[in-house]
Image (cartoon, rainbow, N blue to C red):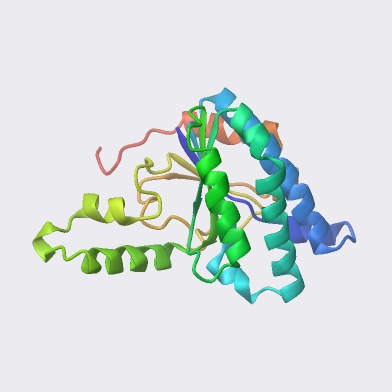
Length: 224
């Protein structure tokens, strides 16, 4: 099973408590750590988390820098635990405008965790669904494929998520009900689950609620 999550509401969670927005991000990381441990116990084989979108560059500089620093800390401090728990890491998104130090750390961590077999964790960082499709088309053109050679399968193989099954369930927290440029191609037949709970409050129990509702849906994939 593949679950994708738009982890929304960190800032609003903090503001409601009179705290700085970055405190909401700190609490959000705790939920990530818990879910990465918990999801495999619920039969989740692939987990994709939307951490930083291409649109997030519009946020204040100090908040962007904090998010980058927090991501670096996660990669450094959680690597050994992820390896012990059999987690394979893939970071999807555009890297050419990220700091070289972060790009090197991402590659080093992916290589270190490449043999994980219990859970494939995809972190979407500097990711946008439209830019992903544009990058795929550019690569197809650069590789010299003819128009008649291009079908849905070919495009899927050129996406950042190549080799990963499409999400079965996509969860968005905080009450917003839109995809926000996340996995646009891959979510064509994904079941959507929206909750008003802010991400820092998205506990294991809340995750169970989403899985339970998903289990009662009938997926038709365009059929009757």
